[in-house]
Length: 288
Image (cartoon, rainbow, N blue to C red):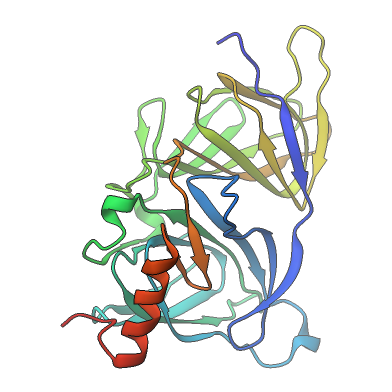
């Protein structure tokens, strides 16, 4: 581990309105440039302002060609889909949905005891040979997500591996690492990331010094709420001073395939998008 990953981009999340008027902070969205391959979208949702009025949600909508990951911190989301799945994702729970060739689903947020709703949605691409695969669905409760704890470092591992702690979400095409990392004050944390893998972090509480060179001690102070993209290398460092820091870490090997995003669909060609829209119009999008 001798090649520290430098910060290549700091992204200020932008307020976006989605669904039936849901206010989100969006850091990345699907684009033809595909700069975050295999990751397509990252949204941070919070409905904690009484002025926002009654909570709206995401009424029934289609997806094709992607995997969506919902990670709740506070409150809950009730969901239903065209596979017949229905349930509620509560605090600390994860829903990982592989839309494959097509799924229709709805997600309706509900406030927790504190009155807050708080969570993240990540979209991960599917490679071309799996775009039209059978839709799949994994619902993971908070109690089954293992926590790695050592010397003031606390990591909830959703998917991937930290030392010998393995996340419960498996068989994801991109084989990504997706984890919730919390560092106590006064720490320095080094973490290996395979060379060539895309790496992004999303700081949502506190602040830390990211990508400080251990020999010179330099680095960039990143405070909540910001997304950071890194250049290539073997490892990342995060140092805390007087305050703790908490961030989501996402890493994965890029597919290096062209993409054509269109709303809730991400395919490889414009013809595939046209075919998708045709199926939606003639009622053949969902296969019995």
